Image (cartoon, rainbow, N blue to C red; front, side, top):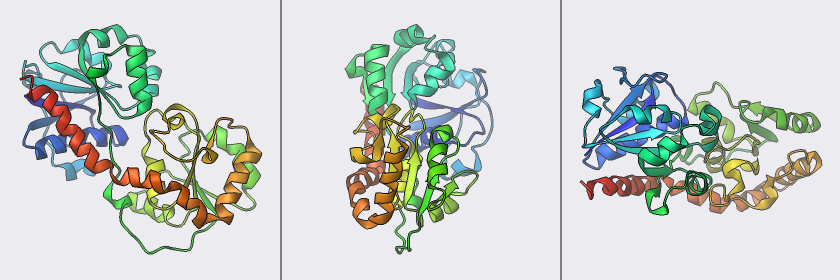
Length: 314
């Protein structure tokens, strides 16, 4: 069997990095795996190099469709590339649900009948995705497998504890309209820093001096930044949208999750508690951090388990 990971060409984000991580792990396990770079809905693989950020994964890529159109090929589509699923005729088709919400936004579920008919295995990154694939797509549980992801080693690096400041970090691309009222209420005693346009070194530097990371976005899967912030020592506040509604995906105490995003007084009180009792509050995230630290090892095991699903059939 030869494995191909579908990935948008020359794009850097969480999904493409995850695809490169899988390809790297498959090769590392002694299997043959390639990136399958695409642009728009063009089925032909793009002969482009990996983005600079992903060179470290030492992957190779498919250059001709004829390489992929083989009965011994396993093609791993992501939920953003489901339009290509019926266009490749000779391969085993896998759908990796990195994000449920993005799939619904992009397709409105229009191709779900094709997915039900042609996908032989579903990979899920979260409990949120697992329940969607089982209950809405209707996949048999024996054809659903967890393959999550892991954050970069740079966030795991131990650094001397620095005096924390009353800083709140946030991603301005996610749920900004829902946290703006909180920003306005707390601007007199909290400094808000947007995490945008930063290198990983800059991200970790901010995460090592801040006390809070807040995320009121959609949580279409297990998002990376909350995990990165937690491992770097921040206390995390979320809503209950998407995967954040599942303890399995975001295992933090309920006091840090808000069903009512307009409970501005409650949110501010939570922030006061964190800032006034920071080292006590941070203990509430020990289980979450422990789970995050195990993710790379679990990912490696999951990818091998995934490959065995096909190698044993082959």
